[in-house]
Length: 267
Image (cartoon, rainbow, N blue to C red; front, side):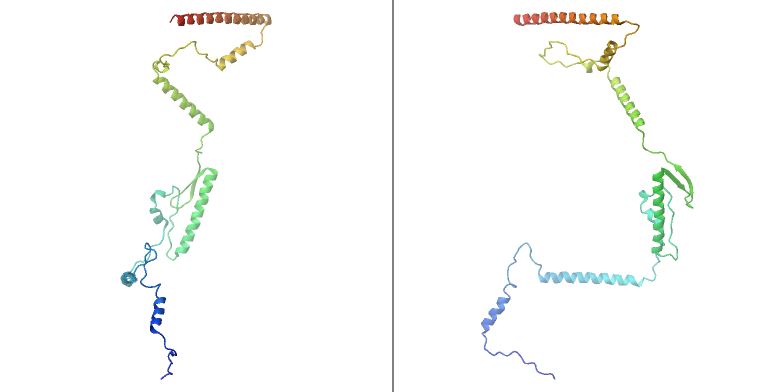
């Protein structure tokens, strides 16, 4: 028998009501209180235990199924050796057009060594593609052996500036032909005159640039065979005629204005 452990000595008589009040004060903030936030209420303990039991039952069933399958572990077939063709079959739309060697994993080759060998092969193919883009060439290889059969020059797809300009001109000509074929009468070239619109004089048409150039060339052209006097006479005649024409035009304008005023005064 061991030594008796002495209990706590009650040296003074303690009030039981006071002790009970102290206990209740400690539990005051823990039991029988309404929730602080009614939107965030805690799940009751009874419901938590039910959820815990359900999850444990599910885990047990899953563990039992795993144990059943583990019995037949030795009877399973070994994994097939890795190959490039199996990977390409998963992505039929992304198959490359060039030559790709069908590498197969060896019998004594580990997956790590096979993937290293595959990585070296892909690096070589990437270098070939860079070479083709740099020099504008297409490398043809034998599908079985992978030997280079031919290095063919590829035509550049970029069109020259001259060809683009020629194509634009052809398009413009075709559009003009279509427009002229559609225009049969002068119905499209008529002006729509509004009711009550009055026209006092014809419009001032601007002189085209080509005609201005031709007139300047004729005036400033060099004289031939000593015809300096004839040119001077012609210039003076043209200036006189232009002055006479101006006077006539002014008199005609005044006559028309007076006639128009008379008509208005009568109306």
